[in-house]
Structures are given as C-alpha cells and as structure tokens.
Image (tube, rainbow, N blue to C red; front, side, top):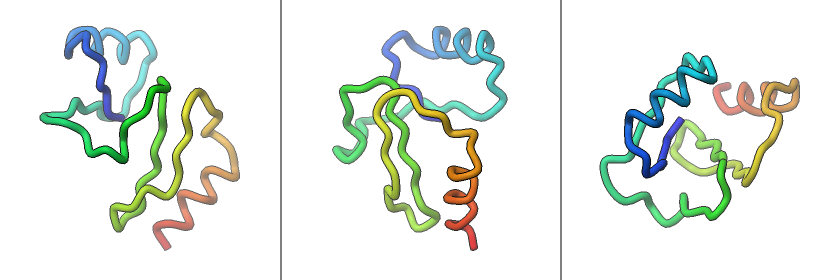
Length: 77
C-alpha cells in the first residue's frame, strides 16, 4: 500500500494499527508519476510484474473475491 496522506507517518501508522493491516505501507520519497494522479480516495492500482498498470479502481471496492484472486494469479503464470 502507498499512502500519500499529508498527515505524515504518525497518522498513517495509527490508521494501519486501528485497521489491523499486516501488509507493508510505503510513503513516496518524491513526486508520483502522472499516471498515479487521482482525486478519489482510495484509488487502487494493480501493477503487472512488468510494471504496467493493468487495473485502476477509484473509490471503495471489494477485492476479496474469487474473480480478483483469479485475475492476480493470472499475472504470475
């Protein structure tokens, strides 16, 4: 997960702990590439092993589905 929250690392850390997330959360060291600009929070990008954006979802979505798992698994075959 990449956080671009302006509240800093402390705010992000509290959010992660409150939600019980166990995956890594990163904060950008510099400006994001234009392809990642979005006015929606959250915005989800799925990036292929080759580094291409293969899916983009603005707003909330359900990712714990058989379809999403199948899609993600298809990229690593």
